[in-house]
Length: 215
Image (cartoon, rainbow, N blue to C red; front, side, top):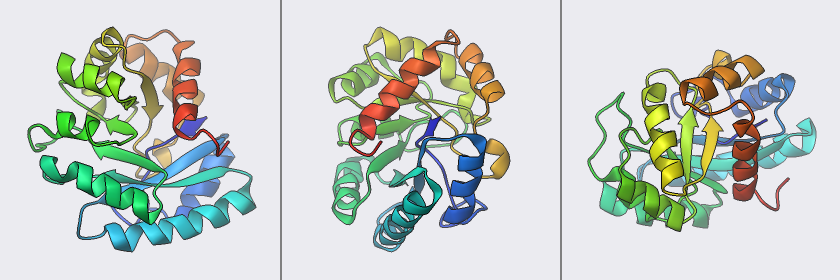
């Protein structure tokens, strides 16, 4: 299993990086990314620490742990600048907090994010055809999420995304241990999104594209 959207207590998760990594390994994960919430106030604080611990955990837990971020509520026109700074500091997986229906998110976040050189647009909500086509053009993966609330638009994201040629990945947006992937959770999420059970293999392949060279 690969999960490229997970939070630690560096943002609003409840576990240390070491805790979440070991629990993921215990659940059968092959690879994961630590993607705490960032904006311009904390990018330079969080990323170096996650880079350091990700390397240590990968070497000791026989699990690929990648340093990443979730760019969150950054003014849309500044997302590209934020993404570039994250890359410079060592983030390997860049997720952008999309326009989920579960929260109020700045309008046009989705379109600016998929134009910004990120890897994954998380929980995009009512994604438009243009946003999905731009994601496909720029090889930005669209997230199908297991997270309650954010997952309300999964079927819409899958339908519009696939019609536009965009690639989908399955992530948990983990904040607590109970959010981690299981076979049952994967099957339930795919069914709710209107995707066949075997589509998970394609989503894993799409996730591997992001981490190519690390597996």
